[in-house]
Image (cartoon, rainbow, N blue to C red; front, side, top):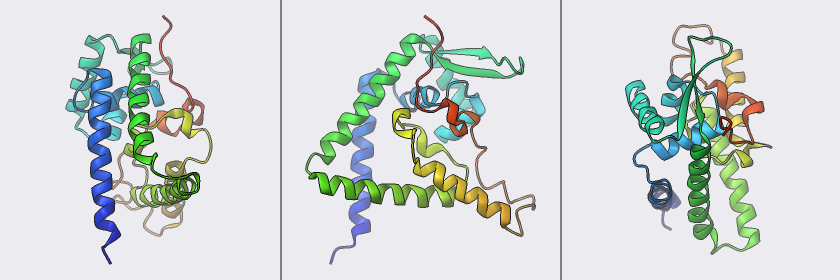
Length: 208
């Protein structure tokens, strides 16, 4: 019997390629820029260092991506109301529209891929995907890079990444090594925007 893991790898690779092509075509952006749009829309007020963590790029790479988005009129930098030394990232109205195109393109690819499934199969797939995501997030700890192309409308109830991250945090809290210097070093810093329930379920932009 063929190993299902090999086929799962092919499925993930094929979906990633098609989503990548679709979101770049929909936004007119390349590289991680479409992901950055979706991430900032998901967590308005994100800092560049948190964006870098979620995109899994260097700080300088995130800065260059933000520079491109600012120059294109899609993102703005704004001093934080709580700390003027901190710069927050927000979508402009044009950025909000581009973000919606990115997410719609992603949805079309995934919809086409799952169209071969009947409703029962789709329900079973949804349950399995949630279990897999929870497991990945539990092992990854506070790494929210899984969320970088998420649609915030899907995160209003029962997010498996939040569930997994919460489980990981609970494990660290009770671990005898939780206080050691290396205990928190293995996971990227958790984004304030990604972890705030108040910031979920919407794409925020500055006023037009």
